[in-house]
Length: 152
Image (cartoon, rainbow, N blue to C red; front, side, top):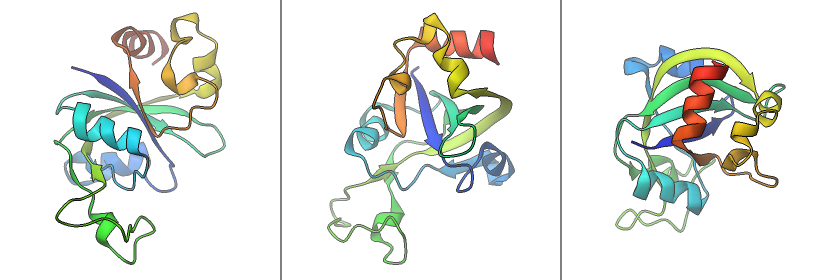
């Protein structure tokens, strides 16, 4: 099992939105960064743990726990001309972009970004590195345990 931090803007898709969705599941679509895409396509497995992170909001931070609920599959938005994520260069026979489904497990107290930064146990956490802007980052088992056992 692996662990991930996945960022979503809460005005687009919040932990509450996923908890209300059928099966408490949503496709994690619209990712347009190759490294984040490769995490979904090549490294994620059903059942992997997810820290559901609210970003680009007044108080960014971890808002819930989720799990990867599907294998990677082509992101439909890349072929939808009306979508802001449309990619004219993507070929249906050889898709460029992929997504996975994510299932919400539970909402937690908000663990703000600034609180995450204060803990030595999280010093090397990828998402806390200066300049990191990836929407999906790996989380080590030790980081996962620290966050889920001590901060939530």
